Image (cartoon, rainbow, N blue to C red; front, side):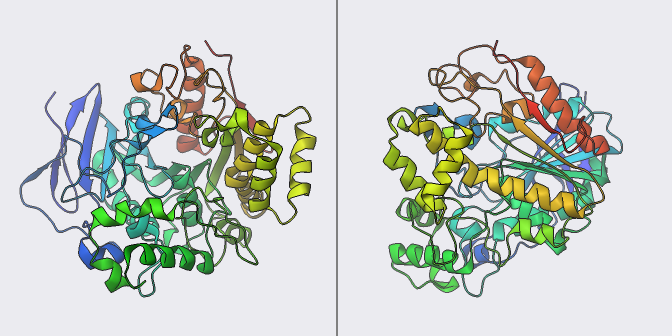
Length: 474
């Protein structure tokens, strides 16, 4: 089979034929920003002459390398870290070899707003192409260049990158066999929270028709006061003024190196808690939370599927050995970062889990704060305003990783969504899926629900039911 060549608005690209699919990697959707342009809105990429090679993975956004996550191997999730190069605001495309007018799905990766890329092995789109979906994955600016709030610079530049990628999809995806009138955006963790921001953004209207929010937070945006605190801390750590000219002269290497000094910032204010509970110094910066914008009618024309895993908080405790060693004081401390009345919050969770250990309570409170509450609020807001259905799900299958303790933690659903369970790095005692055979039938079910939602707007169940994805391991 000859290598496929497609004409885009910027020029010709040559991909590769692989397993019945056409695969195109590293196609620019915007010009990669350098210097002061790192803090501006994305602009169109210049046209190129001849045929651009799109058969090999390309550069990634500047970021720290994050292979490990305590005792858990998260390399399939975070990918190789920063791979320097000329163009990194790029997309990868998987399309059926005979694609014509296929549904399109666009994936936005997670990574705490500071890491991740299209090169992460988890995001291989072969299974989607096999099922007659054109899949697009994308890179966007991260960390300081993507999300630090600076006077005189557009806010949420990483989100603006995603919007630019969606505009590229609208203008180009038909050439790859996709239907620009049937586009589903989906994302996980930080990527899902970005999607909540896009759902609430009027500039995104018409760029997509369905959305899937996997473990995101419709209440996850920082206030201007919280964002300014991060900006001040970053400028102080770098010894510069908190301005665009000040940051523009700092090379990417230094912007990455300073990130550990921003870890654990207390962003609680007199009126707001820290929606990320200190786990990341970056998020969207908005005047109104996405869930509140949706409650006012934003995104009502978009069909929505939204859900979480049962034990989201386990990812932040089990690999570090903190689940088993948690104390009542640890539970109180995390509740105090989240709620004005920590005792009442603890009592609420203890009522729901009467036999829970301190570690289990701590995980539940953390997971609910990071993903559960904001997901429920967004789902309820959308259901109240839309003429389409609002589908909710819960991923409950428990991974046997880390001696069976990881459970249905944050990110465990991703191999099932992408139907790529055989990926070797996912297996073993420290792999995301553990050391027992994962249930292939669950991957068929879950991946199939995502495909059906993209095709028809119906993943296979009827609201107000919350569908549970679960199976007996092995």
